[in-house]
Image (cartoon, rainbow, N blue to C red; front, side, top):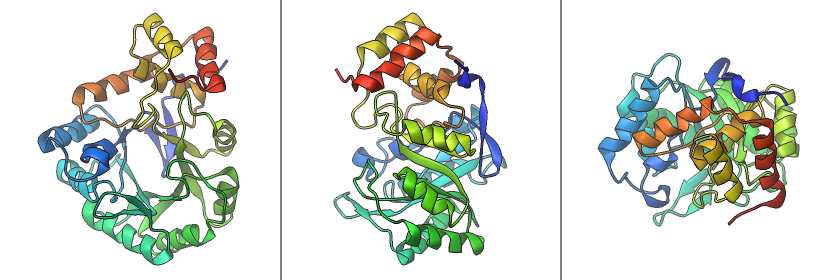
Length: 293
């Protein structure tokens, strides 16, 4: 079995990025809504990520809303030349924090401008259009209007590269007929394995796959197998869950989020974990049984 974890970078937005990045979602308040619990700690995590060599940060103006983008701007602007900032459009929040679709071309255009303003950028490195079917699982249907809208913004120079989020294989194919697609961000982890085929499909054409909720998100992964393997390699279960993703395919880029500098360094250390073929097979089987204890 190839050791894909030995592959340390993968192309994104026209340049190689480290395969462990940082997701900013958790810097907002509870439910990804409102200000952070500790603003100083949030700024410290962002600065620590860049100091540790992370060169890929994932965010969105609807986190908060505006909260994570403004924190990123305050902590890191002017941005390091090698930093790739990926943002998302396609949703909005109401006054209660509910997640609502915002997918008309006009709404997408406004969201791109909002991201530009709040991040203080002239152009966005990558914009993922998030298709809000089921909030965490894709639904079939044409995404031509949304991808066409982003392609127009790309021609205007406001968006450098286009990505997709919460999409099916058929939607990826449709989008690629309209514009170059550099990444796909879907729900995927050692337990949630519906996108196994899509991961391999994207790897074959050099498109990055970026799992959201790599550690289970709002309901963290619990597995006796994960705990057993973690003990055998002297690591934590969350580190092993990340290591499994790095071993799974060379096109997987990780964006685990945290509001703790300690957890940030713990996540980064996952790239040094080596899994035996036996351990990899045990972890692979978790997805087959959907084990959740």
